[in-house]
Length: 268
Image (tube, rainbow, N blue to C red; front, side, top):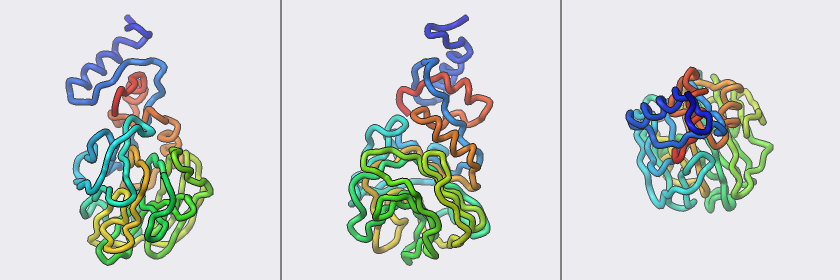
């Protein structure tokens, strides 16, 4: 039996089950692109769906300033004014990666305007303590390129220019001192070293952690930002980019991804 639009009955059953379990509403559409399974190892995922919470629980978040929400790359996104708005991820051991460890930051980013008033750099997701010496992070540079690194040095910088109003999917992986920067699913830069630092500092979206000076506020929008305690591979990152507006699956297993992909999210 098929529902209108040739959507299998099993898909509709899954949809109703998900709604009853508290998932966000959606509509059926067989033409919808498939969402990408949320890769293993995720410790934080901030979809920007009208609330600043981490969808995975665990890591707390604290919003500051004029954080608002607007149309994003996937549903709605978090919009930052470049002067007061940011989102703190208070310190936990889970984000205090050792230099010999691995992690990934990936997000849809729309960088508006020009460089920040203080240094020209705009923080996407950065961990920095009160000393101001940043442990690790992902930035937009004064010349509107994506850059990742740490206090010890700028490790990788994109060739892609972040044009105002344009969405780009950006990801950086770190694995025991080896950095790889992806823009829109493609590797744009790699580097060996520098190694990240460790501290008791918080991380933050749209600000240089909790550093006391050079706040490096971000102006624009951040959507579907996620942090992983491992280095994602190129196939996983390309899949997230290719999913486009379908985003990452709320059901995070690959086995459910093809069925969930038949369901178009009305709002995420």
